[in-house]
Image (cartoon, rainbow over all chains, first blue to last red; front, side, top):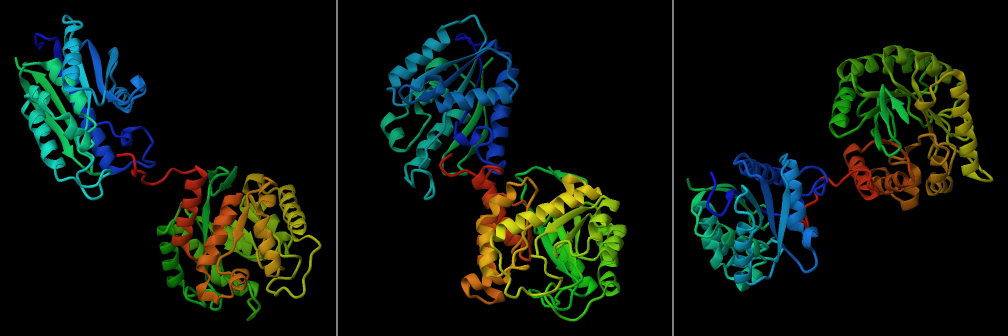
Length: 214
Length: 286
């Protein structure tokens, strides 16, 4: 199934360094559970039969394909056995929403004939608990819940409205990438599956897959 | 490459040889595992705590009641056979200087002969060769078994340790003991006062540099007690500090009473050295 914007499926994964091979020392159960969810979501992305993958992630200035989001995304694609060509689209993590949405529309327009699979690397607030990397901020849970509602319901356009300032204060690493996704999908509707939603280390990790409505 | 009981260990390996005494009078446990069943319980405990090797002894090291070869055999051989039967993969060492005992325990399934008295009985290495067993070649300063050091002096204690242990190792190899099954042990406190044992510890890297795998037997010994002026029941921290220093310098096997604590120290050294990853690294990586 292919929507008018060429997107056949989307998967979304967080990009903590924890997912990098060997970085936890011995395997850590919570991380392996997250990895399994990521691979399941990417498996659904690949099963939709895209011709190519566009990997979307936020970056700090100058990082480009060295950005954590892209490095983790490429590793997950390898682990999932992806043989397709993979391009990456990097947006500055602090890009204004309008720029992110425009970047997303450009992704979808770039080759409308090709079956496009999007892998969007994004995670939520790092201030979800007293032991979270950024300490507790009571606004973190409601912010993330709003994102989760968009991801789980399949109404990805709702991500366009995320507040960049609040997201930055809450140490949300995924806001810009989510808004690229919103721009790419546009008003297309679809159905989602939430494969994982938890914060075992105080950072919200959502894993989802999405396919356009028939 | 060290080979014990059919397993190979690389030079980074850090192995624990847990002490299992079938003696009524050994200094640390004072007979706690003399009874067959108690000793078997001790084996189960140390294996669960992470020991790769058990070192079964039937004669206390210090002077005391005479234990002849027949009595030593009575204490060790059936026990070795039982441990062999219950733990097919465990590396079984027997702490003995007597070739008569060595022969019987090898027949019962021992893998390693821990000759802690420095080759006092030259036929022991022949038994090791005959049974393709491993052998620990220890420095005891040339003193007879079960004697205390008395006014021993060395021009250079480490030179004496190197000369004797490497000499014993080469002799054993010449008799047919596999070179991959020979370890050397500087013999802390055996034929040494506290100054000597401390110097051997400080310069352990020189022993490691010989290329022979090094075993150290440090556990709760008097040099630890004297370094800290602490009685027997308060030497664990000193023992563990010494363990870390020896591991860092490249020792391979650690003969120990306190297996859980020793395993933790060795795991920490391995993590610092980079030869073993941390067990769970998540901080700062979420």
